[in-house]
Image (cartoon, rainbow, N blue to C red; front, side):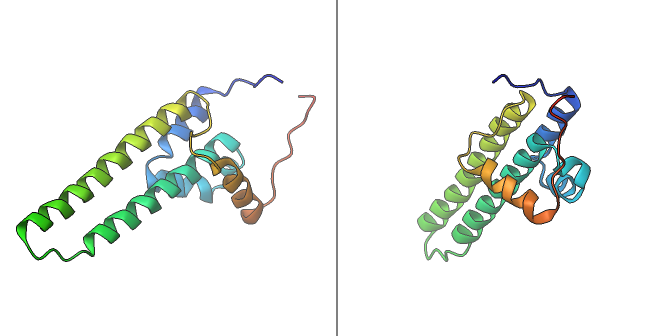
Length: 127
């Protein structure tokens, strides 16, 4: 089974979905949400953003009592941000290459999300 090539505008939208506001808009609009590549990358973007938020809130809630501990907390938050930007960049490159994100389970979650949000477009197998 060979994969059909994905058009450049679809790949570009999938890559831009790693900007969280773009991902929210793409998931809200059915004509974009129905395209699996866009949907999968938008869901991956949302998951990465939620993971970053949890880490920053977790590390930010620590109340360091000394300068050394404050530096460690700041370093942890900085490493979280750098890891997030690295992961987002890596996934956006995969999106522009027309590939699914290298995060396990995101495709299944994206398919469930589409089933929850609305009916799926049925593509003509002969066209």
